[in-house]
Length: 446
Image (cartoon, rainbow, N blue to C red; front, side):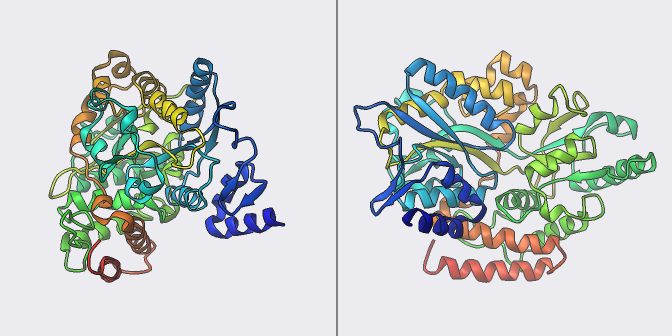
């Protein structure tokens, strides 16, 4: 009976993500936390770890590959768990596991914006990494993962938004190169889309991106804002820049609204990273905004666009090109039965060997600076040569300044932006609602 009650509670708490809990093998629930059969061995018993492996692109597949190597070398058993592809749902799952002090997941996959939210339930990993080892990571990401004096997560791979463009279509329609500005992108997208449809491909679109009401839309919209000098929603000093008095923000939202149904699909407000990649990789788009992981998939042997595209910085607005900083970290749950072994797994998964493997096989950007000169990685991903500049100039979401309020801040923001894209509200009214809600959230301070 208790098992049935807990399942109902979990279904209500995280909706479609509840499968993640059920897959952990829940059988009984104790008041002190989840009692997972097979994961409650005595410390001197057999080591069985579980790891949260993201399911976007090839990440789960590559994660499993590396875990097999780790198990062979250590003799431990590691069970991979495919986390939800929706970032907000993924966070809800991890928060619920922490709330119940679950011992069913040892290693968490943590978005770059989550360390401050999850910190109190994560192990301090500084004692497991020497200063020399930490110095090989991007300093800004290590700082991002340090909450107070505790290093709660280790950089796994990093990200920044990129523009994917069809080189064959640019040449076919007389363009010398990719668009330098948003205005040029609109012009090129219209010309190529009209031409391809006239040639018989009614499913072709000029530009695909992420408009679904989730964290992906916050990333896209932040790039629109920052490229026009409209700020980053909440500034470093805590002031709110997403307001109806911000003319650059109004214009950026209005432009994106115009894309929907013209150069971008009518259902753009429902499209996420994988849905946009599906359109692009099928050969039905001239341009795409996405993360680096899509590069390796676009060049896979069965891809219709293999060898027909390149990537580069996103188009510029009045303030230049802007890419949202993304990426994932690995952390150890404070409630793990095997914290030392889990930390050992994090060391392996964030080490040079694994990061090189992920870069070559999946075009995941390393978080170790030394790998950006690796000839094998550059041969597999020629665009990595310019990624350092893009990553060093990437725009961080306001997760540090807003702390544990960030998820609510982002939800308020992407909800209103999504309504603009759907034509349900105007940019001015959306920003007015955002400002009102963020002022209420901030109260006396973030």
